[in-house]
Image (tube, rainbow, N blue to C red; front, side, top):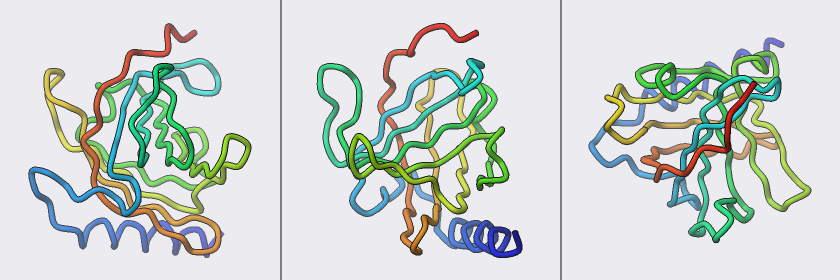
Length: 153
């Protein structure tokens, strides 16, 4: 558990060290981002952001590889807030990286910060995530909005 706390702390320091600009530098290998209103695992509201290297196809689902950020709150509750995520914070959200349709791994630790925005402004933020084996995904995102996945609950 101490190692996971250290990982979250390191992720937070890495994110804090990154300067802010109007157009954040995307994570290496993931220049595109998409966001949608989604559903949490228990069918409550969630906000999901997909970081990917390829434009979406007709079904609005990213093709691997991609990183999925899921915060189990509606959009209005994530803007202007930061979320430290790990296996212990599974009720708050998760960050996972999928290399194929059948191969996804959850981040050991991640910090996701959403900038403050009005409902008319695009969702935007920064991620600093550490995956098993030490791989990092660090950078900003300004996702293209996608249609909601439907009603939750």
